[in-house]
Length: 569
Image (cartoon, rainbow, N blue to C red):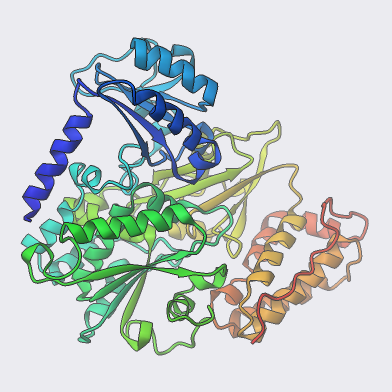
């Protein structure tokens, strides 16, 4: 089947759903929707609609507005999409009886509306794209969130999906495809922020017949859920990027690597792969072009270190998730000893836009050193927790105020914990810093995978840092002793401090341990182990000094954190 035929079938199905003759009820799902009861709401609408003609109920992805879930989107004969937020079963029944049966929207529950061109908006209801926080977002990788069903490939294709792949195969050769990515300035979104195009070129230059592209969705960072969010809401966006990466580098196989137990991302990814095979978007002779490429899902156990690129390969091979020594680097000796390249979910999800629209269009978005957008996850003491795609260059203050809505408590925001447990904290004196890889690094914090945990003035910094170090100590794979023992020793010292039993030189000892970990550890887990402590001291030294005075026990429900190292070599 040619791509034009695939696209026409998909558009016909999409147009039928959106016709004036059909009422379409979309219920937002994903992890946040599931946790807030979206399945029960879907069941209510679906059961009631079975007795009515021309009413379709569909589970779609989440819009990222975790605070508004369950979120219901109803498109009726007017063509306007009406959204209801925080719907419970009784409200769902009211909405069905009024809006679906009697064509009368319930104004008191309405969250917003999306008005197509040529349609008149419902008076008194704000348009969703003009409301906070959505008017401050910039959607590229998340453009389909809440609009399409993640389990229906035709929804994705009807909204421009796989057009980038078709263009690459039809108009561009692998070198031109790779150069589009290189010239776009796309940098890795997994934390290191290395040039994606340059990274791909390392693999493209290897002439092996078997080469692997590995997509890393281990995502064990507390506070980060955007990688799995993409697989929950639009897995075909990631899959198309993964196929394009294989084409650009001459790879033969792709793996989507997901932590076991996260069922929605796993099921959606497997279903997307199966659907792509059915339409000859994967497999042999893709779209009749002679390009062969296979993709599968690989699972890891409960291991934070499995997110490190060489530990990831060990896990896929069925071994314990522990980092390898480098060199050799993965582009030379990777999975099963074959050349490999590892990319983050978000990184690959930008590629279809770059190939479809061109690298210059992508470079128009973002800052000078960090093109494109960032997908950030807000949680903690914030009014509007959720997952948001914003333009690189937005300041932290604007993110907290315009996107997050400010503190969710009566207290001011005191600090942010960014970049995962190996990242750092950011004090309010640096909230004017831009969300940009380089700007945040200069401030002593990292964007990392995009998790931002907000803490108000009731948060005890010393206890927060102890919690982060306890997590890092527990998650150490144990392979190298600087990380294994270093994290344990730092936690022991922090436990003493938090229990008013400090030694006067404790912080000097922690710094020495941290420096030893930085120079002697095999991977970033140990190398960055001191980072949260260093950044906390930068902004909140007086709190550490007070804790070291032995007159200020830390207010914590946990008297002592002594966690066994996860594994021993």
